[in-house]
Image (cartoon, rainbow over all chains, first blue to last red; front, top):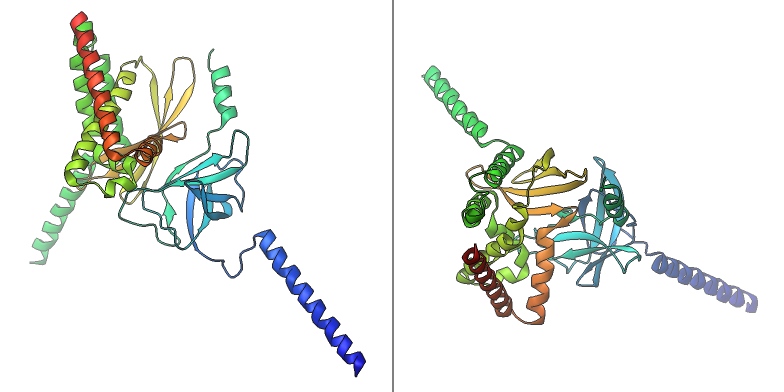
Amino acid sequence: MERTKVNVAVGLFLVLGILALAYLSIRLGKVSFLGGAGYLVSADFPSVGGLKAGSSVEIAGVQVGRVESIGLADYQARVMLRLDRNVKLQDDSIASIKTKGLIGEKYIRISPGGSEKLIPPNGRIREVEAPVDLEELISKYIFGKV
Amino acid sequence: MIGLRRCALALLMVVVFAHHAWAGSPSDQLRAQIERVVRTVEDADLKKDGKAKERRTAVRRIADDIFDFNETAKRSLARHWLQRTPAERKEFVDLFANLLERSYISKIELYNGERIAYLGETVEGDQATVRTKLLTKQGTEIPIEYKMLRTPNDRWLVYDVVIEGVSLVANYRTQFNKIIQTSSYQELVKKMKTKQAEFLDEQRRTSDRS
């Protein structure tokens, strides 16, 4: 009898431990379950240069979502963004890929627009700005002057 | 009876298609307008020193045919546009058009036989993007994208220009937002008005001198 009690306690403890571990790995890994919270919008960029799935999406420096996935569509980069449900984007919002600091990581900055129309879930942000490629710009001004 | 109806339908189709052919694709319309600008800037008669003002007015008139200043101003002011009264909006569009004229028409006047290549267009409903490239004499290529919007009478007007991946609307949106957030909309209008007055003053002085 005593033995079974100990066994049950150990078993419960183990299950609890596994649950805690699962919770931790989901939180730290930023895995979204069952489609996650919020809604999806897409944006097509000529190039995403350094942006990754999981990069943050910001408005005025405040994180409002994450990059869900990046794929190729018609030789352009199609970025899926998952945004918080209470964040509404106007039809003419602009998504730009920016760099944190001079050589920091890439993130998406959205500047809200002034249109009365909103982008619905699974809609598309039409106005985009690709990251400025510093190397390309430099090479242009080095090799440009022939 | 059926024959008559078919005839009318055919006639209608001809009218519709003829209308389309006249309107042309966004690229064609843009190309025609840009060629007008180039012709004006290269006009030997207007190139003379004393004619600076005439040349500028001529370019501005064509710019009014190319740009939808109302849409550009609206998108640049973004959220703050919704809070403006119709009168304020009209005033702002004028000020904004003048700002663009000050900043860019002087640049257009530097045009010196650069070639413009039209790389293609994508049309999606009432919006279109025309990709072009400016080839300078030094051999550098500057990618320029025109974002256009269809008007009810099938004309395409530009509302944003993206040069080297940097959007004009995004640039002004950030600046206007910063000014309005740190001071007020009235302050922004005041600033734009003083800049325009300064510019007119300077123009008057240079034309007096010449």
